[in-house]
Length: 302
Image 1 (tube, rainbow, N blue to C red):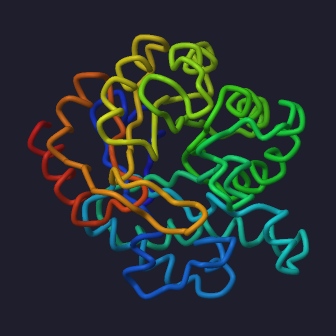
Image 2: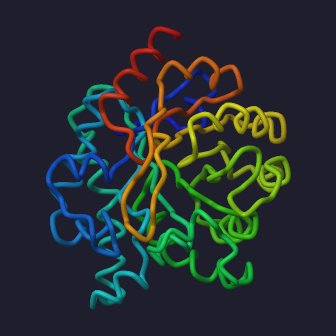
């Protein structure tokens, strides 16, 4: 069901459950994601797989679906021969597929259009470093066209996610001005700093007085780092906090595989909520089973 009220109003009343990693669910469905476009390739080649992956999270209890547009850019689609009009249509399709996945669900499901960082387009893991050597104005120029295309498709919110540094956060917040859609801003972090090394209090302060930003927080980070980051986000901005860490494994960009041990635990929920989290879920390698457990815990707390 498409919601009848804004996301910000729902956050004022309680905690909403986000979905988990789209790519791991697509892998579980047998999809090949070795292409530089990652899951965004399926927007053109097999959109039904994306709809099915979203639907798996709806069945698990997700109340907010994040679209498959994280790595979808005009530049990336252009490298595969897609013209501007086709690329605009594919960006819009990412929102449509999420809406379709929730169409028969009796409860409201919000759709967050993913706006990944510049490094996601490079497909070399540089979103976990930031500092690409581009000025804020150059990053703003890169992000603005696809933000406009995604906003025109009618999502409930734009997810400015996996942001590695404050320069890109500033560029993204400039690029969304006037688009008519609320946003959340979510950094990828290491400890109490952005991936580029800036203190989180400084990073979150960028969004503190921006009324378009309905939530701030972290994603695609170590689960153990999320609680303290949530506290800093809430203390710095006074806004609802969004928390969706990855499984705890580490991404090896050169080998293009995950290594290490999974540490994601739905039992962390209460700590996240105490810190101010009102949007909770998982990122890479967190699947429907973990989101179902998280949804059950949220329902019990409510």
